[in-house]
Length: 94
View (cartoon, rainbow, N blue to C red):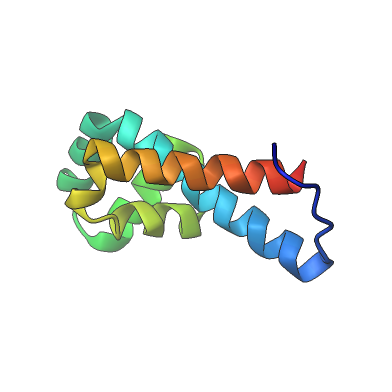
């Protein structure tokens, strides 16, 4: 059981930003084939960012996080770490 923690406005804003990135990384990992095809069919990094943002319904910040994702993060253990961090942040925000 997690202890209830009160976040100040700055901490809450930071947690929400991080949660957005973690959510989009999870979505990208779940849809990795579509994301890969979207990226490789784009004419530039900027075009890929826009296309990934559209595909995943996220912001440019979220799309940049996907484009910056290292392939090793797709391994099962790394995915589990991302999910664990996401769940901890969600619990803190609840």
